[in-house]
Length: 237
Image (cartoon, rainbow, N blue to C red; front, side):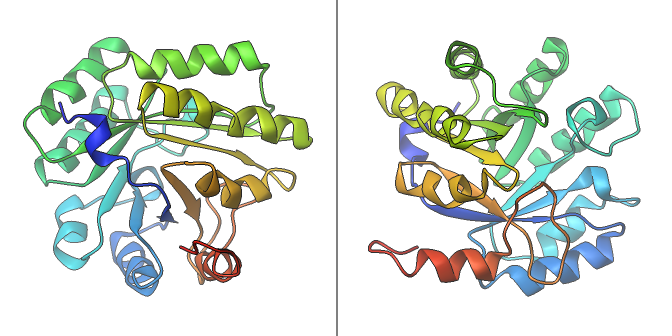
């Protein structure tokens, strides 16, 4: 397993691509490559997920996600099929794969085994599309991710007010203390600012929508808008 401290390079902007066909997704991804540090390919949105087509056509590091319906995604197949697609992405030397913290432990271990001795990094993710839990719950989720043997954690919640935003951003203090790269921000209108400020407080990566594509989560900015805003500040990305 890769030492997490070796990959802690903050400030990445990931453009999330969710299209119905591989051809459409590759076109959208190519249009976003200049502004993206990482391209997320949402396999759960595709009717014909062809991983090798993406790795052959695109130059930027690729993150493959196959989000389960029980975590707000679109994948309608079995869990074995879903994790199998992520394993295929690892075999294709993807830069990252995203797997939910709530995944069946046996299937999670299968993916960990596949990643061993590969260049692929695992992002272990947890989402709440309804609210932002209290601090102790968020800390517990972080600690579970820390013990999961993943390379990077991801905690994303829906914000109803700025106190929600602050609780999630404060997780970066735990991440720094434990030398564990963390993606942490909030969804929704109230959470929009956290998609930007997370980078300023040490977040590993944030997510944006393609300029000509649809959002994959509420409150997501287009990548051009995000770049424009961030360039107005010192230490611009």
